[in-house]
Length: 517
Image (cartoon, rainbow, N blue to C red):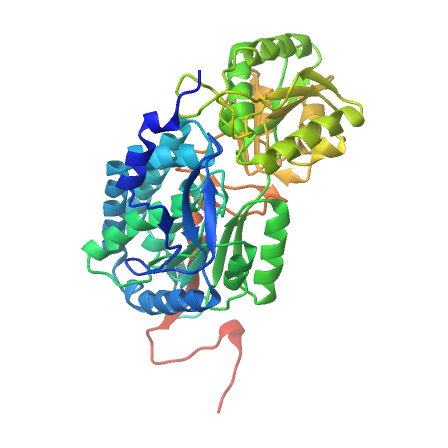
């Protein structure tokens, strides 16, 4: 039965978030700018128009940058714990609006309501982390090689941080960046995905209220909207020392080249092609739970989604049967209805890529274990609902080497030692998330060793999908090498300075050099 989205309080949620039929898409905080060009946001849930957002013109971008660079001068000298207090208040506003914002994420992007609420919870969690961090932006003291000298290292605010986010996590990734950047003394300019622009406007409304209530300058939190051309304004702008970009590897390479061309810094979070290794010592129940959620959660549109399952031959048939049984129980439909497991893909273009991938795996010699397909009829009017599929494949297939942002899981077999499985896992261009299912301590430790997984995230007895706020999130190789969120990821948002202080009346030169006048 199709449950109408209006019955889930979407209209009320939009109202609570300050969203209208047409929304200005450019903002320096409380000040908003309109243009004639509009970006329409259609929900993949039911295909209906949610609202429109106006695109940023080059002229309005200049106004944003003027406000941001001016605001930075005041924001950077505010003591970090006071900046942390602002972030604390922002986190409290997110707590107050968690329900409507979670609904908007679910409705505009298509992920399940629980995942939408979970994404807002990630925003709240990173704010809490950032508040504590605002009192811990530590440098260090070193011994000088010169007598009567002291050395230390400190971190300073960097400036304007440009944030480019993707549709699959339309609010959390922005907050991972901005909460840390703010406590570091930076100001932020955000270009959300043009596939989820209303989430960007909603977040800016929340941030703007907090900054206004505290009597702070326009420009600390800024919003721009549009296609890649608007993004290029930021990536090519020497006034933006750091660009944090989340999206495809193709996009990341373009951003990296542009930013490097002006000797700026890039924080890149790009493609994943994540695998779970299943050894003979794996717990079957845990394996199935981790693999199924990893493969079908967010309809396979997480950068940490499980794409490949590398199974020991002794376990292969057992795992294959258990997965097929689990997939037969999946309920696909309106993600706002918590009875469903799987929602839609983001749009019909994504559906097309899903269909192409299924055709290609057969053309390359693979076989389909659990049939895919596009769903139609009542409840599926948007044309974005697909069946999660399982294919048997080889790691060298071109389609397996490529990240397909869709719920397709590739099964492959390994023989003998776990080292063979690790080699298969590492045998792709991406290096984001990885996991091993085993109760064998030696296998687990080898997987985590220098000779193990080459990914930025390596898990034991937990799937690939999801991230802990306290740890640095990111990956290697074509994933881009960037790190966001926890640990010492804050350092990328600051400039590092070494200081040497001479407290004597002499000036000895380094390395024993004599320069007598």
